[in-house]
Amino acid sequence: MMDVLLLADLHGNYGKLDAFLSYDYDAVIIAGDITNFGPLEPVDSVLSNFEVPCFAIPGNCDPREIIDVLERSEAICLHDSWLALGKVTLAGLGGSNKTPFGTPFELPEEEIDRKLTRIVDHMDKNIHNVLLCHAPPYEALDMVGEEHVGSRSIRKHMTRFDLVCCAHIHEARGITEVDGVTVVNPGPASEGYGALIHFGKEPKDIHIDLISV
Image 1 (cartoon, rainbow, N blue to C red):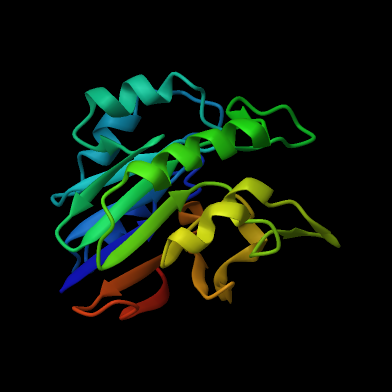
Image 2 (image 1 turned 135 degrees about the horizontal axis):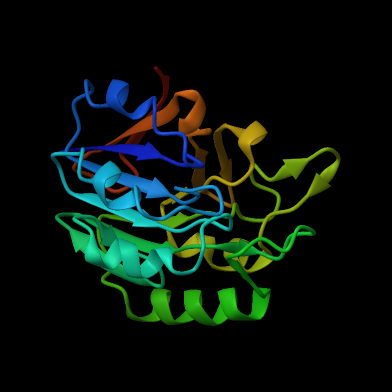
């Protein structure tokens, strides 16, 4: 029905992107950290390389001004928003919950909760409902050392979705299921990692392949 390329954590290293162009997909979604604290000037031209619809959110290492850049680009900025793409509804929330490092795009859990409450209350429910977020849900692909660093607010709302596409924790690349919801972290695209997601015709018919180039 629809195949989507999921990328994240480019951190300004765009050298691997051309290799992803050889795959066959209908759309691209980017789960944040497109830059590494900037610069923002290359973002538009980088995203224009994709000849299919591209949907993106910022990560915690992106300056907040990247929202304006994304909205002026050929991509669609999904931060704090949602849209229906055929039988798939994509909802987006960029940035991350608070970190010890004071990175540019961090949100208090209370704000994440408010934004996700609004999204899940108003978005179009579909055959497949996907949350695109940079931060992982709490206790889902969120381990740093021995500590869970994911967002408790994302965990609270994730059961309203069929799939959560996250990033942020480079070493947590993988696919898991939590509370009946599939969670995928494609790994850092800066190192050639990504994922291909196939959405079938029926609810829960979602197949994910982790890829590398």
